[in-house]
Length: 313
Ligand code: SF4
Image (cartoon, rainbow, N blue to C red; front, side, top):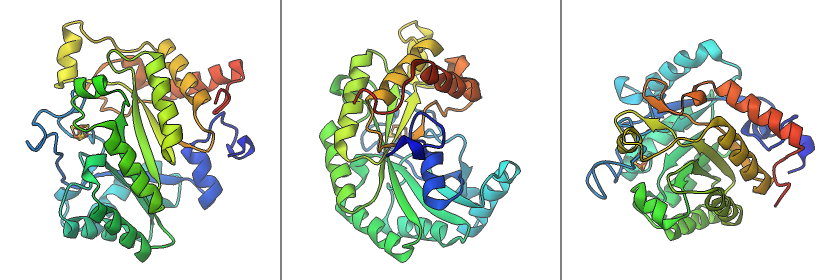
């Protein structure tokens, strides 16, 4: 992607992509559709990934089950966010837990009813690659075919490419599962957004850049770079309280995220550069609560260094 289409940022942001593609910003509404996760329901484990909060990393999400119909649920979500409405249309983000972990009938109902809303431009479905079967890919393709002017994205929580770290955080699937899943979705023309966590225990800049390189080769359309948040009540918090886990400083995070961007394919869309954890649960790093400052510091430092996405690719 030509930097002339990045709307002044030194990287290809989701905002730039949406303005280029839809001519406007789309507002994202995160929803909790009442799913669980194989790392929570006993299929793979009961305690979840070590960083995951009891809400399945969906504390900002509108809880769909508190409303009777999907239409009411979406209207509640739109009403909750209307005070900061900056666009005319919405992305429904199925965020909490694993949003393909249900019967095909349930998935079809939830996705279809979200896409039927005339104010919804598309849906983004957060899930695990081991919860995307061939049947689910077919289901997604069929849903998208019913709404060809809308979009269906899939977000995969990869977090790391390193097996030792994956075992430490209890992710529960090998890297090959992610690779196969992205390949299948890519063949079906369904855009994939890969989530990576920066600052995982034991990972150096070299580990993270290897993950960036892997994502460059994977066929992923977008990436979310997420600062490791230590949230109250998690097993990671227990390690932190024992002094066994150190959060990144803002300076280290700024350097690391810029390094990632400079090694990232300039065609990959950046969906997130900060953390997105719950304010009320966050134990560390507290500097990340000021998101505007985090982003401004990254932008300012990139400008000072003449850095931009893909410069070192
Ligand atoms: S897979 Fe996702 S929802 Fe499940 S425990 Fe891990 S982070 Fe939480």
